[in-house]
Image 1 (cartoon, one colour):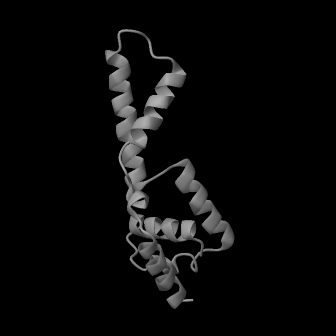
Image 2 (image 1 turned 180 degrees about the horizontal axis):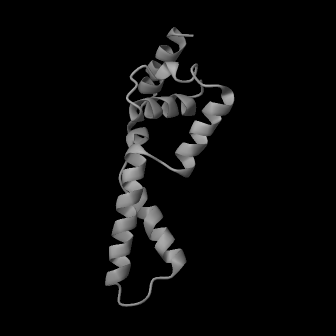
Image 3 (image 1 turned 90 degrees about the horizontal axis):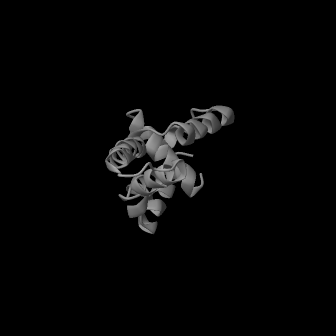
Length: 109
């Protein structure tokens, strides 16, 4: 698995209550795995979803309190900035964490 697949598998595993996340890839056909990854991009869940929801609510409050109408482009920019304001788990990952995930995933191959 690539590093991005390892990250996705770990996040996906946590979201469905599976601690053996390294086995999830083997339990899916290539189509199912691609579909799960696409769904995570189109309709995020977990930490990412909570960040997006909080950013949208905050941007709405900011727009309501603005003395001038907020343009759509500016509103989208506010949401993007607020969504990425706080670090998520991937920002704290170190190379040692990725190396450990690789070892776990290879152990069961």
